[in-house]
Image (tube, rainbow, N blue to C red; front, side, top):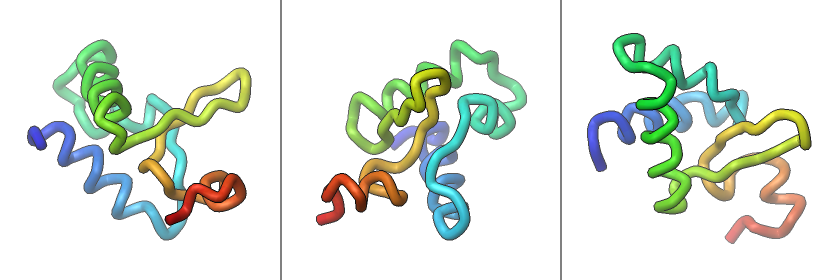
Length: 79
């Protein structure tokens, strides 16, 4: 895992007790030297490798660790 992807995973794991889904802007704060497009590529790579997953309310897309949070448990995804 690259340093950037590890930063994202570590951030999500550190917050797992309080929150399971995060807005794109939350991740921008982790990479002050990178632009939004670069951060989006990191997140997309993590989604493609099934480390993260998208969650959408219809108007907002959020990111979280795959299988984490109440939504995953409600849908029977916890293994």
